[in-house]
Length: 276
Ligand SMILES: [Fe+2]
Image (tube, rainbow, N blue to C red; front, side, top):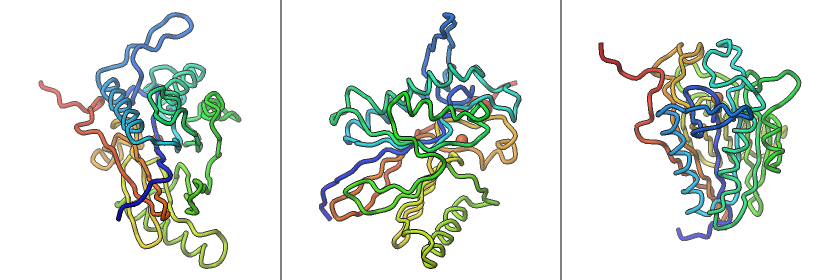
């Protein structure tokens, strides 16, 4: 099964920068000269992000797709209490800095990478009528795809349906992917949509991958640990996500392979075991 790879695409999602429980580059200094010291858990995720950037260099990844929730925004659900800072200018600045690391890495053997971005959950955008994630995309000269996009990565003819994802699973995340795959096939059978070869989403912060005949269904990991906020507190076990990214390769026979890179022993920031 020897084949030549024609595209290598990194998919990342849900960085949630400026959450106290997410990746944060160390020592960000504001215009006023105030330096945010990130915690050890945040630093550990940052180190793993740099490791993932190194893998993208080793593998000569040519494209980066970001599927939403780059920043935590103003966190209205928790009234801003879980933030490093609610200032969206600072969040955009750090978001640009972080994505620049992977998009324009000087160590990349193929030069600057293409960047495509999808918008995340509305409550993480931070401002009414203004999509702050698009600012980051514009800063990095990426292509903003809005909330959902069907993408062909040339010369491949395979269609990737990319979105952040909104829906819920009662118990099994696999059910969510399988259900969406069934609906996609139904819509395709009725001639409503083109054939979707890859359905890829973020939002749930857990890596799940299902490969069936003619369709890959991927749920991306995140760059945030368990956060003590309302959606997470519904299920302590279920909301323990995965930290990392995914690289998808496409070969010259237009076959797709999905490779996951997940952090071993991710930190517990909100739920560390304490002695008493
Ligand atoms: Fe998220």
